[in-house]
Image (cartoon, helix red, strand yellow):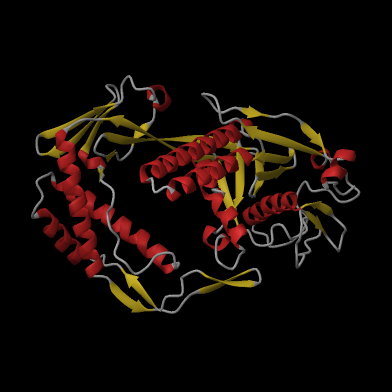
Length: 443
């Protein structure tokens, strides 16, 4: 039974698993695919039309933000039928495989070029032709015949020549029971199979999350404040930064690459467990994050130490992984820690960890202020309101509320076979402990 305050939303789930494979035909297919893909990119690049266009600006808060990029000439990728026919005819000349593989090459080439164009217009890519540096072959669904009973995929290589892959008796078989198979990616030694499914979620809570260097700080009226510790993740990054620096000084490239892989795997493992833990701890929830621009956070206008610390924290990866396992949303990050959630006053300068409103006297940790504002902005956006009134559930000075007096501390244990969530306490933010930490709330 759907309650009046619940909204049903569909969460699209994707899980990718790899199956090892040994077949000499696969290496030949990938070699041809990569070469054809680069030829398609070359032809598209040579036919790009460069048009004059001025930068496009939009106002976000009190600042003008460039959304098109400071480029006077923008690239127009050819998409007319005549060009695509010439491109396909060129690729078909030396094609020993099924014709649908050429269509797969063309679609992948356009995807790469569109991604380059988008980054170029934002000033994050140079006017340099993309190069294919990895060996892979993306298979279209028209080349696949899937038998869900036998748990096999038959891929057409050439007319009447097939490659059969099975995920029966694999360690992930029970995890994807009832899921559908997407477009597989073939590599030299394995095949990556994406499985897709959808899940109905009846939303009961909305949590606003402030992303910080050492923590994720959230707020939801029925729970209170939530503090997720990211110090173990920072320890992983710092430890491997030192190890990589030593390997670089010694000129040991293999050792350096080994540390890079280990750091990436441990970071990925921590983020996966963190996301799974938050999903288990807060079901039927929309998690709202700031739409952070990592390029701006590591720009040279900031201090060197600040840039290094910002570059170390993988906010985007955390947000992306959360979006894969739970419902997420993003809001504008401007002034989230400088706007009073009670009266709407925006403080011009913000120093230290404590926010103090000169208008209404609210005194609170600025990370908690940001989490309240992030949640409020999402709710106001859903209602189509532009006002700066206090958020639903945030008390006036004469309205004490239990959610403002407790803080839920959440941690992730990196060790173990499955994600482990520990909740050591619900901390009372009133009293001597709150005073000692400088987190006393408005009475």
